[in-house]
Structure formats: structure tokens, C-alpha cells
Length: 269
Image 1 (cartoon, rainbow, N blue to C red):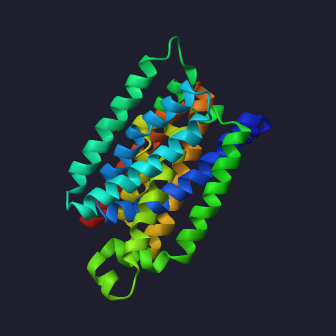
Image 2: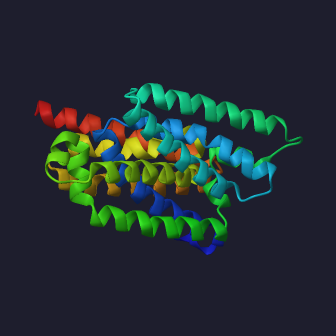
């Protein structure tokens, strides 16, 4: 395992992967509690429009995808609250519209676009120093927000009405959560790509839920499992020269399956 650390690109991949895994694992808990798994998937696919804009105008694609995903997240929140539309409807509209816009813009750009492929399927081994600065800065901001507002976010995720009556500023906290979740999903695209990124939100928490007996253990287990999934996935992909994103997801699926089997055995006994 240690031999891979001699390569700078592997050092960047491991640092970025572990940081993003921790963020997505914690946010994944609130995402599942609020039944927002489809939100993450929708934002990931809609961000293709931001990637396409960045490529066409020779901007930094990750930055343009971040900005547009935040706009999409706020639109989803506005449509849900203002027009009382269900989340499935609003996310479906943004999902398909963003994806369609991205495909249309890409079709206007002639030639092969290798950077587009890395965003679609993920390529954590190709993370640059510029990516590291953005990931590091965003990670600090997100962790600070979670640390400061953890109790309020937990209450909001469990019962929005109770949170409001308890004095939680839900009209401020909830849209901020939408923005943070959208930004985290786009950052996660660098690891798993648009198609697979939601897996790192869901699999660690789903695995932890099979084994955890308290909310505190759920959080710690989710982060631990996310780190294990990323470490194992990166190592296997490096050793066997396999695409990193799918290997990370399959590692997570395998860990979930093992935890489910272990839970079933302990229940029977």
C-alpha cells in the first residue's frame, strides 16, 4: 500500500478522496434522513451543463459546474417552497433540463473532449493542484458549517416542523444545506464522475445503518466506511490498472453486502 505514495498524483488522489469521502459520508446521513437521494443524483447530472460551459469558453470546468449546480439547487428549493411542487417533480425538471443543455452545448464543440469524459466517469488520479485548492477550501467551509450547525441540521433532517417550532431558522438553514449538498456532489464528481457520485453519499450511510445502534455511531461508522471504500478502491484500481470510480463504487457495494450478511447472521443467532 505504501509504495503508491511515492507518486505525486497518488498523493493528491488519496488526500482528495479521503477528504471528499468524509464530507459526502456526513452529508449522506442528512440526505437519507431527508429522503433527498434523488436530489444528489439530479444535481450531478444537471452539472453537465456547467462542465460543458467551462469547456466551450475555456473556463475551469469544475468552477463553472460548481456555480451552476448551486444555482440549480436554489431553483429546486424555490420551486418546492414557493409552488409546493414535490421534490421528485422539481428535481426531475432540473435533472433533464441541465442534462439536455449540457448535451446540446457539447454537440456544438467539435472534436474529442477528454476532460468531459473524466467528469462523466470520474478520474481521481488526474486531480490537479488547482483542484486540490478548490477541494481544500470548500472542505474547510463545509466542515465548519456542519460543526457549527450540527444540532440544528439533525433536528431539521428528522422533523422540519419541530425544528421550526424549536427556533431553528429553517428558511435560512435549509437552502444553505441544499447549496452545500450540491457543491459537495460536484466536488465528488472528480472522484466518481457524474454517473456514479451519488453512490458515495448513499453506500457508507446504508452500510453504517445495518450495524449502528445510535446516531453518534452512525456518523462515525459512515465516515469510517467511506474512508475504507475510497482507500480500497484506489488501491485496487492502481494495482490492477482499473478505472477508479467504478472500483470505488463496487468496493462500497461489497462492503454493504458483507455488513448486511453479518447483520443477518447476528440476528439469527
